[in-house]
Image 1 (cartoon, helix red, strand yellow):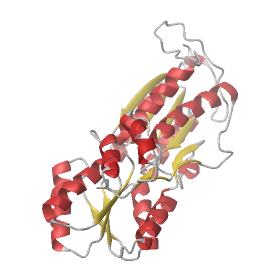
Image 2 (image 1 turned 45 degrees about the vertical axis):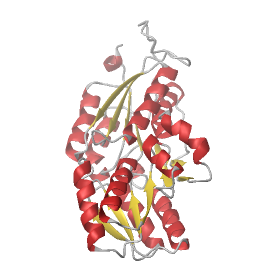
Image 3 (image 1 turned 180 degrees about the vertical axis):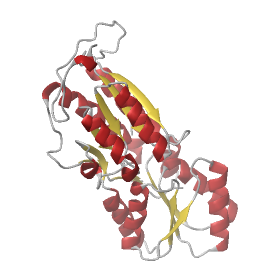
Image 4 (image 1 turned 90 degrees about the horizontal axis):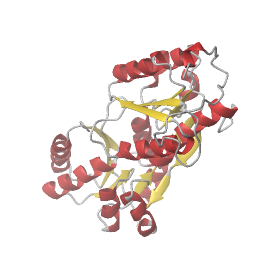
Length: 316
């Protein structure tokens, strides 16, 4: 498409390109021909990222762009993936910033190459500092505080906040938010890539400390692990979670999970890609220098009947 031959700067948008391939990628809304790279810190097997990717793929289809998706939970390898996208001369990059310090050099390299980059999902407090143009995600500190307030109102005094990925600023912010409302909150680190290990760690902790009255998981698959650990340990703690998948939504419906704090990952993926398209085509800046919030949004018995079908459809 001749992208490498076109001079560009980090602050300039690029005119739309025509995609002449008749491969159906034009979708219902456009035929831009842009190539957009999405790079995440996804841990393989975590269903949360299915929603991110589904939203991104739908957006790419709607604007006629090609989406290149890659992921690695290791910060140094995620940085390498961003550099690979830069070397491939993609038109735009959307990346999570769970470990912003480790990714800062790669983000700067994109700017130096004149490739617009937006952040999403993680890094809301750091995205501007590292040089991302826009951001789409939840205010995780606010989400944690609000969850903690609900726990406190229900009489909870000793929540266990389960962190499944070491070094993630978003996960740390969630637990810190809960602790700000419930000072007795305790964190536990588990290996989110190994469900059996998560169950074993939580079972041992619950057996060792029966004073734990709430379990706060930071991802829907971890919530399902927690249910197994609670059953095996005989714990009477109550369970809340961040994020949704179809099984967690059904567990809310069945009364096994009290509520979920949803950040709408489908919207994050969709908006990250769409924002790059609009920036490249028109120079649009969504958010006006502020993050665009997709959450927190609470899912509980009051609205689960409405939301459950969308969760099963992988869009909520």
